[in-house]
Amino acid sequence: MKKLAFISLLIAAMTTVSSAQNRKRTNARKPVRETVSSASVGSRQQLQKALELARGGQYQAAASSLYSLARRPELQSDRAQIKYILGLMLMEMKLNQVAAFQFVDVIRMKHPKYTKLAVEKLSIVADGLGDDTLLNYALGRMDLSDIPVANRDMIAFRIGEVKLKNRDYAGAESAFARVNPGSSYYNQAMYNRGLSALEQNKTEQALAAFQNLLALRGKAPVTDTNRVAAQLSIARTLYQKKDWDRAIEAYSQVPRDHALWHDALFEQSWAMLRSARFRSALSNFQSLHSAYYEEFFIPESLLLRAIVYLYICKYDEMEKVLQLFEKTYGPVSSKVRDFIRSNSASSAYFREAEKAWMIKKGTSEGGTNLPIIVLNSVIEQGDVRRAMNYLSALDEEKAKIESNYPFRSSSIGQYSLKIISSRRRNTTNAIGDMVKAHLSNMRTELRDLYEQASFIRYEMINGKKEALKKKIVGKGVEESVDEDVTRSFYVENGYDYYPFQGEFWLDEIGNYHYLGKSSCE
Image (cartoon, rainbow, N blue to C red; front, side):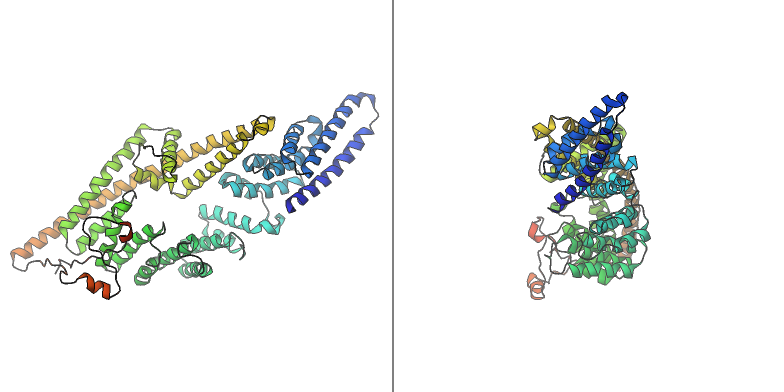
């Protein structure tokens, strides 16, 4: 009702202006202008009918008529108003991408009244679409003082996102701070505010922001994404402060049945290594490297596991892990290299990402040319994920138009399909470029990790040599495990204990405990 009332007020104002202009033109008496005046009167009568349709909630009919009228030369002076009302009609029809183009046209006209209104509406539809390009265009022409109070939180949040993306962390923190409690953007703004502070190494401010968010989500389910993200960020902040023990405890609070648990477990393993808790780190690796996570791109975790074995002088286990690293990621590196060398067009990279996206969504079972562990990592990158979601919004809008035959066959329907087709083509090219950039970075990362693996192997050989020297002089190297410690001991002390026997089960993930002792003196 509020939207319809707002539209009615705009249309009423526009009707008054149009009627006055119509009377002015009708009063013209010069014979030389009779033909132009007659055409103008006819166009204005059609405009009045279109506005009546809009006022009555007949958005599709009004949009079709307004689209035609916007191109009439005799209505040139009213074009900004007509295009703006047309954008409102398309918004009501949930055709946000097509509506956005109307608002952009109005903004380019620099109309003293409707440009400000169009900027506001463009920011709303761009927010709904998740289109960074349109959003940046709107934000670059926006004065927050001109924005209605109801939309200021959204605008402040989006400004913060843009500044965060551009690495203006102080500006981002300030923008996120302007989002008010109670806003639907508040939780995400609080989270991003903490990230902005953390990027500036303001760990205490970051910790306070994340703890505040965690408290706000205290009554939410344990797997609530905002709650889990806050908990994980607390752990990361403590890690950045080098408070290893508190970081380890914070990581352990991330629930196992959430998608972020795998990241938490890996990062917790680093904290355990830094605090010399080697047994605990090795327990984590049993889960990280289980068959359940075999499609995760985590090469660094294997090298970390090898380093832990190096510290406790388990050279045979270390050799196995390094071989596993080479066996798993050697072919991955080769396939990524060959794909980059063989493909230069953005479309080839987009097709691979699209296949992986569909497989993940369960809408396809087809194969991919690139390893799925690589593609799964790429499509989870923030820029790719946002662009793929935007693409899905375009496809939904296209399907909506094509399912409405009367609208699809109209002039504005064909125009709408052309807009969406153009935006889709540009977006797929942009996604392809993003994917190519991420693959190049992964290729570089794998080369660096292979160099590190060589250094680790060198240290392993040195360690074996030193162990052999000690054995020759009679000192020996202790090779023992806690064989006398039984399952009942762990159960009585509050632990879940599952001895690893070569099989992985979903309900056992995270419950492994490494029992071996250090082989070093």
